[in-house]
Image (cartoon, rainbow, N blue to C red; front, top):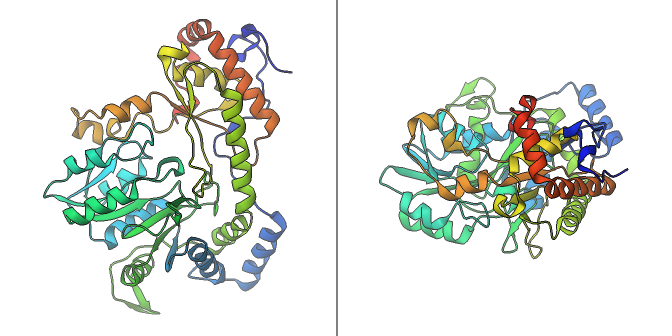
Length: 408
């Protein structure tokens, strides 16, 4: 039964709306029997890793889907990003948005490269080309834009700027698998693009990632680098590490790829329902996708204006979490406000990044979230907003809510 009174909220002692926690990115799982059959085959073959049948097939399927020449599957997206950075011989300073998952910056810093944080466009949440132009210096060797929430960057502007300024362009496309820019699939731009197939992504391989590129030389280099630099059974000709994807992860990736249309359809349906049922609530805006492009609709992103809503994003988040709705604030507080960068750049101010980081909240979606559950969530959001003063006072006086789950 839907709650109709503020006192019914779990924040005030009521029973949580959901017995089980609803997550933003609970894993999608394709046909379990097909995955089990592949797992049996892997065990029968006794080939668990080292470029087996399923890794090769996974790479081929991804390359075919995107229309790119080369796909190099790896153990996770962060490793894929790090190997791509090394293969492109980036050094010195590389410009990145601060409104992204911390791995974008850490993959650079781990290799002794300084991430230079750039502000974002307030509408798309992506790296702002105008700010980028001002951030390039003689020490800049590359730029890593991020297609945040699967909404593509201004690829044309970024390509023009990097070509004119003589720096390399590598895309962090962790959110953007299955999406397009001007009718062309993301994965075909820059020197290369990096995908994540982590469990929270709409297509997962348990844990995994990949680099895609149309550059044959770069692809060959990365294949060496992800396998210790081996060129033969007992011959090493290049610096490398262990970035290989295993067969079980590839089997899961293949199985989920076979359900990609179903997953996208569910995400689209969920996004549309949230958009319709939250319409008209004061200070609430759902980030929209461009329906003329291919989209994965993976994230339902709510942006709040506290001056209008009468309640802060964090107070709404805590009230929802009390109901077992694990809404998440991405990407709070911005990479430049996290260590080690906060200490290194204490005076850095990125106005749009900081404003958006205080306003954005991601809501549960995916194949495990039902239409009925979305209706309950939307009704709760409306109820919380209508009782904003009372909710905020309760949150402010309850010490158990001081460290919200969504900050993890």
